[in-house]
Length: 144
Image (cartoon, rainbow, N blue to C red; front, top):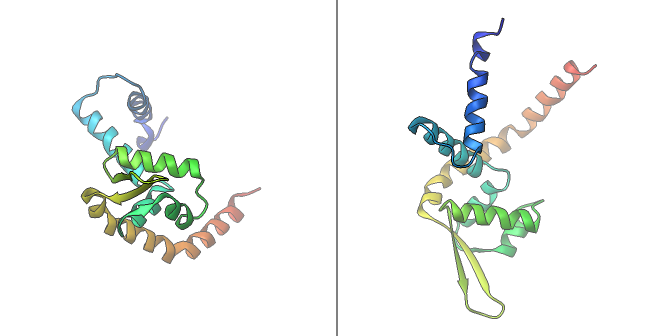
């Protein structure tokens, strides 16, 4: 017998598949849930937080972001910038110079998100050591 907690797994899987599929009609609740999940995935992504925090301080160039965000590849930075621009969180300005100068600025929507992102990153930094210790304890107890 399946626990009460897991009784909706098939429904959840169907919803996941429906959200991933193209041109699938949704009920209004499903469409809203997919949009919220997609937004949270985007703004909570590994690289997005760093980009949004940096861009919230004013215009920032690609190379500045590349230096500022440790471990990000050029390709991943390009994809992250493109997706954040597509979602309306960044504005990209190209200046007609040689070579072209490109700057990214946070939109008002991203600036509204800024305080939450800073709170999240501050929390993560404050609890980083405790989380690492908890993982070590868990792994020691569950390996074998």
